[in-house]
Image 1 (cartoon, rainbow, N blue to C red):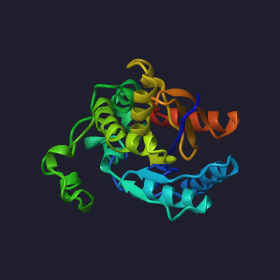
Image 2 (image 1 turned 45 degrees about the vertical axis):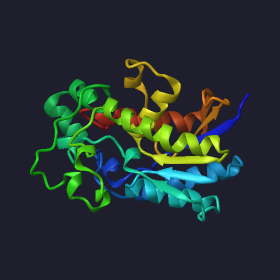
Image 3 (image 1 turned 60 degrees about the vertical axis):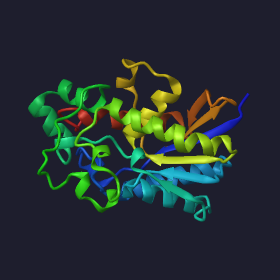
Length: 253
């Protein structure tokens, strides 16, 4: 029997999503298409009768702006919001900013797929003198640099996201709050893997589309009973294929 509902949304398309670049912790904004997706996601939630008591998101503007738009569509912009770097996208290290297709041409699609989707293989790390290091970013002032990665594999992301689940999301859900999480492709993959106990092998093939709400129905112990996207099958399949195709050497197909 369903006791709780939890809704997850990946931010709308960002400028770097459209440019097919590795983004990670780079603080890029939504593209015009991403703004439209965020509005569509909010409308889908409204039309399905959803409302919320609490929102959790990352500290990155593409997630924050998506959250603003969704709450505006729901006429719930007054809601409390908790932001944490633990919901950030996976850190892509030295790949940050590189075009995925060009990287696939240089290193091979298989290697790029491993960097993007494997559980335990991180991309090359940023060097200690890289100006893009998070310790130099005002977003992370006050956070011990030992917690700020120079690159991450998915398992690293799972560790921080599962900590956030236990420390912040579980208390809100068990308090009876209707919770919305607005985050990123890999931080949501990490949370979905944790919730659904997805195998290390199967997580390679899991994609999270941009802007489409993913609803989890949970039992009293917060175990998933079922989950579903608020989108028709054709729209969902097109969105999933778009995400899956990003690591190809050619994105013209």
